[in-house]
Amino acid sequence: MSERPFVSVIVPIRNEKAHLEITLRNLMEQDYPTDRFEILIVDGMSTDGTRELCAHFSKTDSRIRLIDNPKLFVAAAFNMGIRAARGDIVMIVGGHTHVAQNYITESVRVLNDHPEVVGTGGPVHSVARTTFGRAVAVAMAHPLGIGNATHRYPNFEGYAFGSAFPVFRKSLFDEVGYYDESFVRNQDDEFLLRLQMMGLKNYITPKIRSDYFVRETPTQLFRQFVQYGYWRVAVIQKLKRAASLRQFAPSIFVASLILAFVLNIQAFLMLFGSYGLTLSLAALYHWRQSSFLTCCYLPIAISLMHFGYAFGFFRGLLDFVLLRRRSSSMVEMTRG
Image (tube, rainbow, N blue to C red; front, side, top):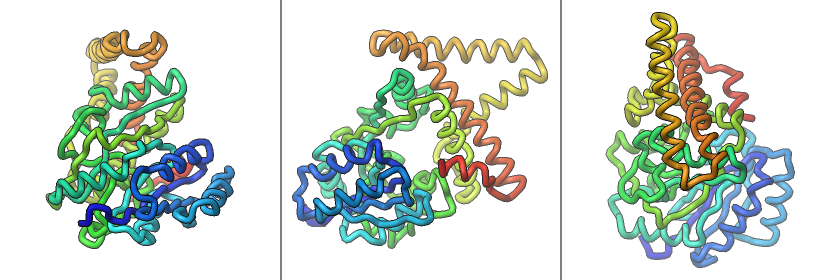
């Protein structure tokens, strides 16, 4: 690979007007040579003014192209962008993400330095504007929230399952195929698990830095993790394996709570009390690093992640395994 390969940046969006302008300016101001990258905005037929904003940017910068995504969902957007890409390298960035000025440069450097890997990126750095959102950001990087997912630790460097905003060699998709468009959510997990099963590697480094804006309300957070749990079942059903055992942990815990409640109320109280104590200790640990309200909200954020994921997982078992269909209401939840 040349030291300055052409890079195609794919931005899959739908109704992202609130964040998209900053995202695009971050990308336009990359320190990578301006004639060596393009920006492909794949829009799911937005209705909030996003398309007008994209049209404005595409008129002022020839590197920006707008592609329509009538299928609406993210997996289709990924594939449309990859197929339209002119680059030897493809980079996927969310519409509510702020990337560092050297994101492309550092990503290309890693791919040059590590010819054994097919992709790179950086650990997730979660940020928020509200107090509850900041608690969610802490939860996203906490072992109680994400277990042993190394790509969630902000200072991790090394081989990992994947990154939130990956950079791949485009030739990879000719080898392993594209994203599975039957997945409304977790399409990236399904793709990365396929890579893992084939023995292909990703390498991430905190030098490739980006900020991801988390869900800012309890309802948004709960819905997000319901979707994650629901579509996780579909991934496991398709590939006959999970990326790690931690993906079963929330569901096993909640099932244990329900079973204890039915069979032995004292066992339930002990289990639930131990859970509450553990979350409270996690909040106390962050006392000096976060505000008082953020610490108070942290147990709520983590529990919403756990119970939302478990609810979605159980619903996925019902729909995908027992009923052999996917719920239209769950699809609509993801669409929203």
